[in-house]
Image (cartoon, rainbow, N blue to C red; front, side, top):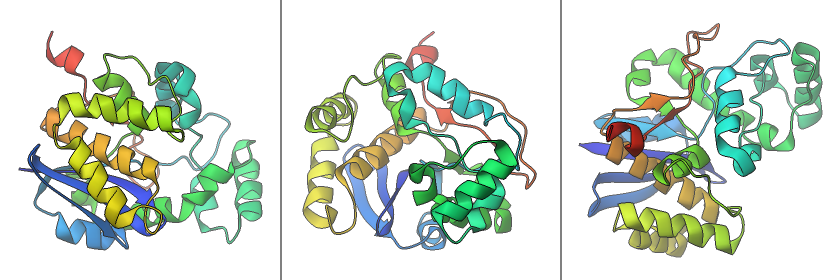
Length: 242
């Protein structure tokens, strides 16, 4: 069975593909359609991207609020998802104005930077709803925390101590973690992906593999207006062992 972790990167989508901890490959896909075409046989594809979106209103997605509550010091890594209309804006300024008009909040630069990828995934899933059986939204920091006994990571992943902290944890779960990270850095770092993109895709792949598809979610939200789920998934060894 194939398990895939995917994170957006400057070159498109960086994917870590695991069959077993010693059977793996990495690749960069230019778009979500190519990623899906190459992984239609996957048992599970976990993505760090908001899927279901609100049209407006002052409340955020409930799954984002709850994930933030679970992450403590790392809560800022879960930034508010844009409203749906902001996805079509031509600039950050326009997108922020639309988001303010619909929700009473501006749009962060972080959220704007992934709007094109959110739109890409949304458009793809609306045209390929069956893919929702395999392709699920998650969040890397929540995955790290759950794999770490419900303890969020201590350091920022943007800095060396945070990178080493996360890789150390992954190493205890998947013995190929060092090899995967080293190959990704050698082949793609700077040109295609950032170091934190590598960590994020890797923890999602490890989470998918360990879960074997038996996932939990922080909130059982309703579908959005396009029929897409507003739900952040994770795997919990603690719950599985009860």
